[in-house]
Image 1 (spheres, rainbow, N blue to C red):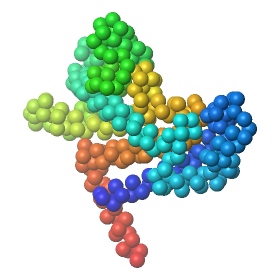
Image 2 (image 1 turned 90 degrees about the vertical axis):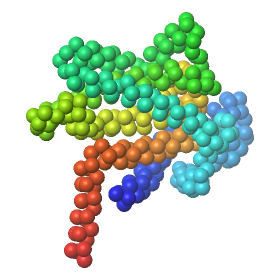
Image 3 (image 1 turned 120 degrees about the vertical axis):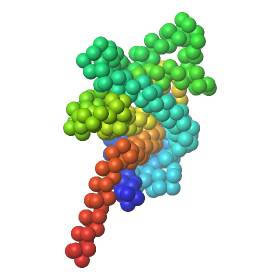
Image 4 (image 1 turned 180 degrees about the horizontal axis):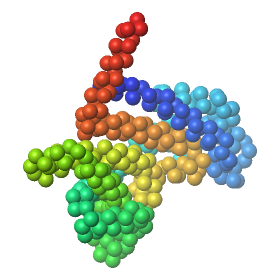
Length: 322
């Protein structure tokens, strides 16, 4: 199992490198002049030439790409063309806000969505099931930024009980987390219901019921655990997506997260900012997908056994060939 984890981590290196090259290529050939954006349209040609020389923008594609990767290996993501501040420092300052919001929103989505899906599955074709599915359909089809604006209008403008903007207190995160988490909870509820209904029809569940096992124990021991893999996949994917920053939510509530920083970099053609953010997001996505795979083995031990068995077969084949 340890070898499998190490192999997956090592795979992140070429994947991250390909992401860097791909994004760098797009930004290199994209229209726009970073010097003009940073210095303004009234800047002289001498100032623009000095700016390009300072940041190596007068070099060709391959030298600039090589220099960037070389500096990145030393932990240097460059300096923002526009603010002249270290990209690494800015990302380190902003990342905690994005991580906190992503984790809270994901936890909220699971806490609300999972019980709703279980309740709907165990009460299939009843009014409880119909009501739960109607609620989930409403929230899954509703844009999170629109719901965020509704929350601001109700709880900040009219009731005045929650702050509309800022990030100083835990109260500032209530509305952003609800706005993002409700949509995720709807997706989790629908997926968990679908997975549970599929497992409930399995032969081993029917056998457990025929042996007189309590319904609650049957649901807990047999149905719930064996239907969680799709839910884990959705949760991991959603969390990985939120690590890129819920851009509109961060804008609405003035949260200085990674998404806001990335959007500013794209708008100002700030290549170091965009690359730095994309690299961090790609690495987080890779590690979260690895974590999802590890959770699979906890939820379904058969997967762990299959990984170990596959590795043993590989080792035996090597011994035979030798």
